[in-house]
Image (cartoon, rainbow, N blue to C red; front, side, top):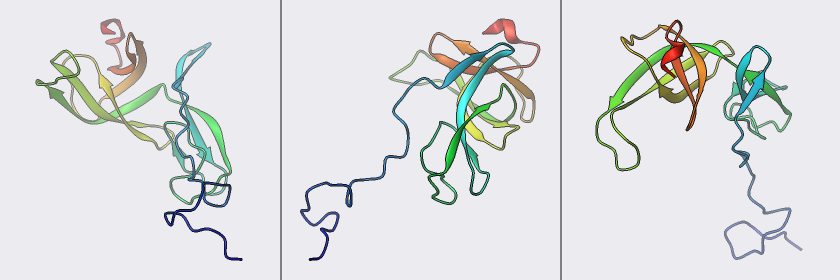
Length: 140
């Protein structure tokens, strides 16, 4: 007998169940003794790190991934300030931050006189987390 094929009216089962990728748990932060860190993952097969934590490697598809703490320091790759939004008070700034672990993530950025490649550090906010330029942590 031929196993059922996905998308052809087959009942979901172990052989056709979709692969769960992003873990639904929203606790992406961990408070360590030296400060708050992001919870990501790293692939044992190829070494690729990612955020948020994954069950499957985005690079090679391996399921051999482990939790890894990321940050708190990074470099601001680029940023933009949003002036029109229906879901959040404006203006606010978002940017891509490169972490030392090789992860680039989109996050809120707080602070003044932002420039690409400036050093930033992770901070907690009422909405979760953001990055601020090093030396401007009191703005968070």
